[in-house]
Structures are given as C-alpha cells and as structure tokens.
Length: 248
Image (tube, rainbow, N blue to C red):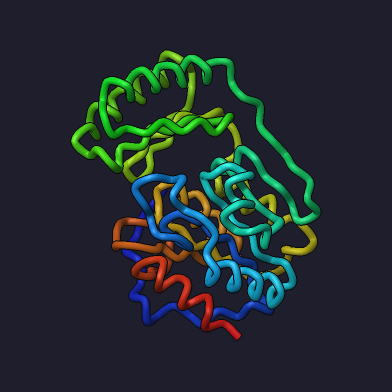
C-alpha cells in the first residue's frame, strides 16, 4: 500500500450530495475521541446533519465504524440504515438485511486474557464486541508498550488478527474490513454509479480510502497529517461536520 501526504483543506471540492455516496467513520470523524468509548452518545447537530444527508443523497450514506451495530444505532439515533460495524465484520445493507461473520473459537480465551491483563494495569479498558475484543489504553498511555505486547502475544496464541488503532489494540475474527464494506455497499443499486467519498481518521480507515480511490472517488483524512492513501484532509471532527453541512 502506498501512502501520500494529503492535500490542504482548501483544495477539497465542495460536496455534491446528488451525485455522491458517503462513507463515514464515527469516532474521530463525526465525533471527537474521548477517554471512554461509552461516553459517546447522541448529538443533535450530528443527528440533524445525517438526516439531511440521507435525504439529499437519496439514502447513499453509510457509517463504517469499529463500534457494534447496536452502539451505532444508539449514537446515530437510527438515522442511517446502511451500517458496517466492527470494521466490517457485521454489515447492514440499505434494505436492513444483516450479514455477520462467525466468531472464532479463540475469542473467549483472548477476552479472558485481556481482562486479566487489565486487572493488573490500572486505567486499561477491555471492550467485548462479540466478534472482536479491544484493549483501550487512552486513559493510561504509560501502559502502551505493555498493552501492545500483550495483544500480539494473545493474538498469536488464540489465532486472531491484530488490528491496531489510536491508543487501542483490537483482536478480531478474520473477515471483511472497511474496504470490503465500501465495495459491498457500492454494488447495491441504490449506491451504484455515485462518486464514493470516505471520511475517516484511523489506520483502520485506510482500507476504506483505498477502496473509494479504486472506485473513482476519494478519501478524506480527518485529523493531524500523516502518511495516508486519502487524497484530502480536514483538521478535526468539527471541520468534517462543517464541510458536510456546507453541502446544498
């Protein structure tokens, strides 16, 4: 995978909802990153914006996130039907049909190992998403190296995939990623033919950036500049919401 420095904010073209399909990450993109994942909840501004975008794109809006399906519905207040949850391991299409990967046998063992590790390291948070488990160290960055080493060891022993993110290590089942989800959504008649645009902030979003670029669209990195396959960049979630709100 090749990376490039994203273009300055001022070069991002204005959004044309009538001809676009939007793929939006949540944490770090539509919502600021917070210390605890359960602290993110519904937001009137975001909910209203999503309602307008769904209408102006004729339903071509999908949220593609590491959160669970239930958590996304809670935070987004049910405004978006097409969702890719747990980085693509669960996907709900525009018709409301849910496609779900199979939980691997090693996940229960890994969850127990993570919980035991977190009990010995104050400030770490373990999140069970059914098809993946995460070890958050945002509240305790001093444990970053230890958390990363633990995740790599547990993944090797349990036969799981490692998915690093911002101040988090996630172990997951093999299966679709965010790029696969974008391609699946774009194959739906309701999305087909539109210009795909992916907004995301984390390393897990790179698969989405790559997918939309290959389909003739572009990615937008939200947050500090870094090597990326996204073509453009917005400074933070506030800038991302403002850009989306400026669409007619």
